[in-house]
Image (tube, rainbow, N blue to C red; front, side):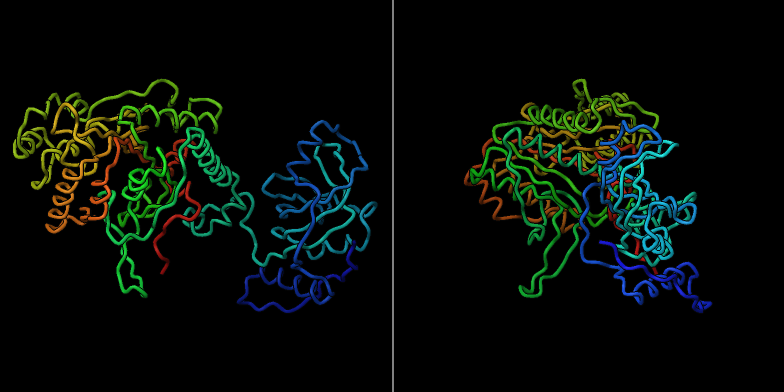
Length: 504
């Protein structure tokens, strides 16, 4: 039903210290409301979305009129010829509204005086294709749904301030199709991961965010305080220890969780203090099985998103289709340096050799940390095609089972693509005696000043004493995976609301 015609907005004085464009919008809003119209109605019933109409009438020839009546809604992103042509956008796409005195009632034409770019309006009319081929709705009725009070950025320059894009993501999404595409792709990736995991019979679960004991990963945690309990809690750095408790309890042979983890660390183009990851645990599997599982999962997701296993990232072509390379960490270090660090029995010998090779290693590094440091400095960046880096040193893997052939190593792997770690996985440690000894070592490191050292979780040891079956576990960083699959160079682009430095 049409609303009554409203008069043109009256001329009123504009304070010099008020943004002229905002003042103009507020004048129109005031006049609209004084006329008795509602600029913010509670509800509006659409019959179609612009994107649906574009698909339905894709074959409609130019200069064709129909009697098909539709009602649409969207945000005004452009107005031409005093409102004769209005581009309306919604999440499904865009369509043009055509307002002309020969077909649009005078009372409806008068409403154009109150409309601006940025307003959200409803349009009822008939479908036509203009002579120039633009699908349009010949407007018979116009309805103001939300009167915007701030002007959008200028069309051709857009939202160019990168920091503003992240701080005002809503404005970024209004103006930038690429931003909408990236964040929508993220939802498709999450949906595909869940589909893969559910298809294999794994159960999705939820575990606590507030941890009384920091564990599950080596990381510096965030600390918060619970007033009612008068106790400090840690925002979880990983859900690992709780997920393994579920396997101990026989809840399922395979469980997984997709959720937020928190690391009180620095910001970079690949790091955000709160990030999304999936962790999965599978009874009766080892790290070889998990390598295959991770390959299959990522391949499934890439196909679901792109329809091919080949992805372009910058100037690199990455193929997730073939079996991923499997290389040991010590082996990769030897390829780059010509030195097999397994020949050194002590940390002192390893550090000395590293220094001889030109690496500035911390004098406190143990053997494993020295190997890991050289790997990070020389090897990571060269792992462009998907690669599993296996058999991490025991010294840097407090939750991983000892390697079945070499006690200096563990059955742990990390998966790399484009020089980035995207997965960390183990044959899980399930001997409570060994786990207790490693926790005690972590506590000693923590007391010695290592803020990333884990705490002793007595209850987790008790759970292991009841029996954890042979288990494979893994975690994949969702944010980095999304970066790879959307050709995004900054983690902030793939997180809707990234952590930012507070404005002064």
